[in-house]
Image (cartoon, rainbow, N blue to C red; front, side, top):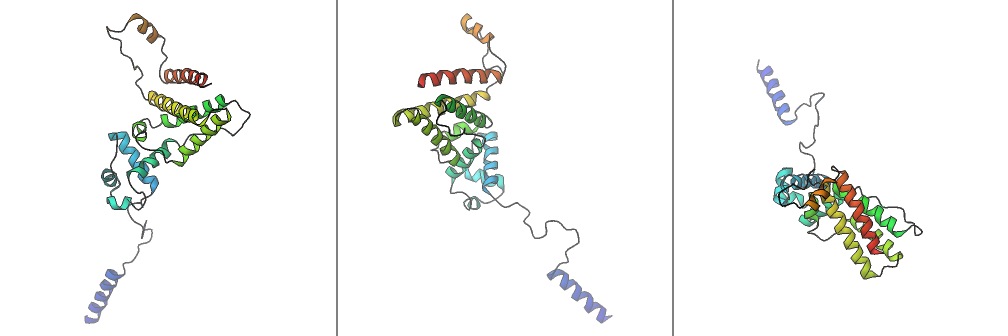
Length: 225
């Protein structure tokens, strides 16, 4: 009996110090919470911006269920997170092939259309991103393409910068318009007959925003020439 008791005590001790892994156990030795990454940080920040209009490092850490100090292993601070969001917003921008023989207006128009489509997915990011200096590799690549195209077309450095700023402002404003209400204008007693007649011609969303963008883009490019 004493021998049996000793054997049982030895078994309990071994189980406490070296637990038996049950067959079929999942995620043995893996952390329950997925490791942090810049992708997870960007996704959480995007969700906060969409739901609350902004984010803080402390709020981002709470959402990810980590300490704020853990975020600094992946980003240097808020500015870095903003650039991750800019990369996300620009991830669908497609640049045309570099063809010096192609008309510069066609190249700029293609870039502007792709830029708008990409940003229109995340209109909530636009007010935030415009507050920070651009340091996104994808954004700089696009601006380089615009600068090279305009320089080849004969624009001097000052006019190249002015033109890029103009295109940038126009595209971002047009991307915001994609998120506007289906009926952005409300008929009121103060609406004059001329405006009322113009409103009657408006197309439903998103065709309305697309039509206005293409009209404005054509006017802009003619004016630049």
